[in-house]
Length: 114
Length: 114
Image 1 (cartoon, one colour):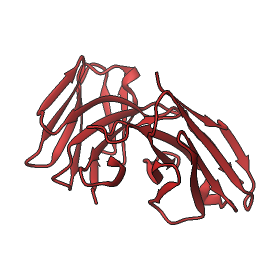
Image 2: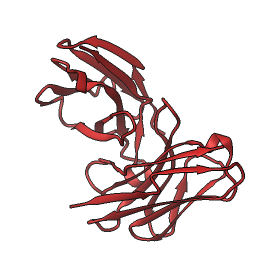
Image 3: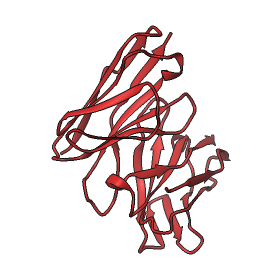
């Protein structure tokens, strides 16, 4: 069966510090991968999605970037965090080319920027 | 691109009553409509979905209806229980979007009062 991992689970970082969040998927090949951010009490904001290794599409211009160095690994990064980067970061995957787009979410990383 | 509107943003019902959440979408080519439930501090999880060739789907106390002509779909929860309290997100997946990615509504916070 497929599983999705995210780490760390929680993170507290000072403004201006770098960020690296990692997401890995097991049990499937060539998944679509997504990064979402959820501010407190708000909806899901799609940040990036990827259809394959090295293929990244950005939905919202900001100080974040994403990379997919391996088929089942998705990394979210920032060189300098802002206060507004605080939130709950969710990684998700779906089957490539499937008839549906059911997205399966990871457990999330709660980021607090102070 | 696809635009999904979800109403209401908050909903409070008495235990045992029914709850209805409605979403409208803009892309007439959208063909897949999932609903996710997110409990406090947890990841969103799929609870039910429907494809564009079906008008209604039921799973125990939850059901989803789709009106393709009007471009709206609804989640119905009957005999609500306190454990139904959560944030519910609808989504619509357009045929012509890259990666088959879905567009999410802003969420509905459902509170079931015992």
